[in-house]
Length: 328
View 1 (cartoon, rainbow, N blue to C red):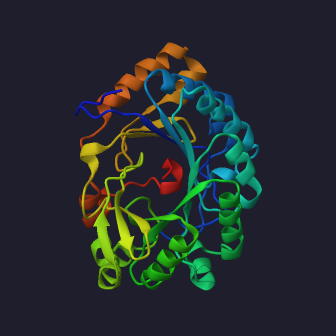
View 2 (cartoon, rainbow, N blue to C red):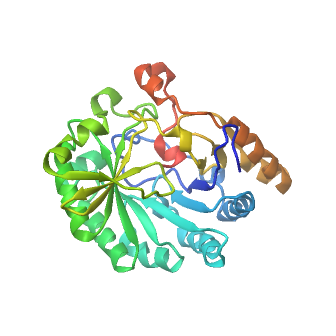
């Protein structure tokens, strides 16, 4: 699939649920309402759509949420999608998780053909973690991470940079990742969703957030690329591979290869845009060929770039949709 700006689209992120057992301050309000179950795509509907996406050139899929592992019987979907990896139709099936249910699910992910996962973890301080996640238990997450490692999964830790909240957690997180052979990716917070903590108070550019690294370590640019937008560096003498995702301070839209399928069946071509097409309606009321037509329409809707900078500066322009509704 080629969009209107000549970018090749081969990466699909699927939000399998908007529900989460955490309420991270930068993601959603503490009191959050969720979609009724009939509005969610069934697993059969998701697998039908995935087959269509693969036919159109999707080669990498990431399962997201909310928290994907809280959806009932999620192993059914994971195993079904894993068949595409085992057949060679998909190059990669991965997941982003908060880690709270990893101890239980790590063997299932590995047996389905997943080779690596991302775990969202913003601090290693238990009380700080509980505050940011609004009640999460750090020990449970760490047990899940180690279970995933024991099952042969490569792990990348995703850490959102939060001004005045977890800047002191960066160096300990780097040491932890280097010790256990994990990659670490730092992410700037984005102006998504109403009712979330004040963005002006939380936002810090990664250039400022990583200043302590440059004072203590040597950074060397790497040619390594993943399916996502991170730029990678090697941190010596730790030997840590560090990724930086900078949607606010250093735009990377020129090389965007992603589309997102929400849990209620909408395709969003850009995380920072409300433009979408509704595949659920086509599935439930139309014929399979309608999905193919809508995918081509979606490609034409993909904007050249997001407008996060303007949305950050002008609150009335910000999207009402929270991150958990679209998937990370």
